[in-house]
Length: 143
Image (cartoon, rainbow, N blue to C red; front, side, top):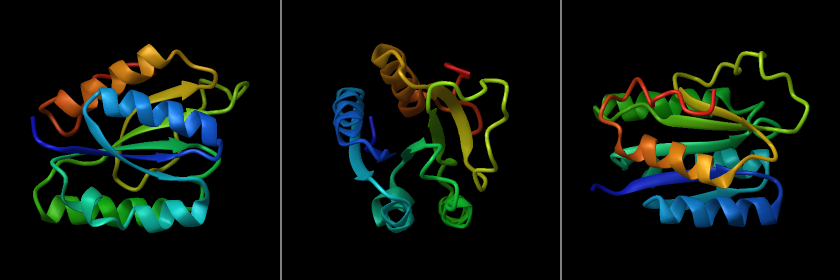
């Protein structure tokens, strides 16, 4: 299987480390960010622009100002004929599950998970994103 890269954007260090472990076990190389500024910088990473598979694990609280960088990443990947970045959006407990995901700049929402969530489900969604062949559909797990 080709190299897949996941960017984890999560303010909580312990949660970020658990996500990193689960994504590594699902076959991803990982990058991480803990703030909106770090997220903006990591979205410009050459690894995300060139990897055959790109998964963005975005904490809803951190991605509110990143639509432009998300759109730029999606456009660069499209120019290179790579699949759209898949997004696994995480939300804090109590966020309305009926609320539609925000505009994520041309990225495909694979799932929305409310914290606390089952890490086996998280890992299954990540694995599905890494192995699925259609760039426009990640299977809809967790929505």
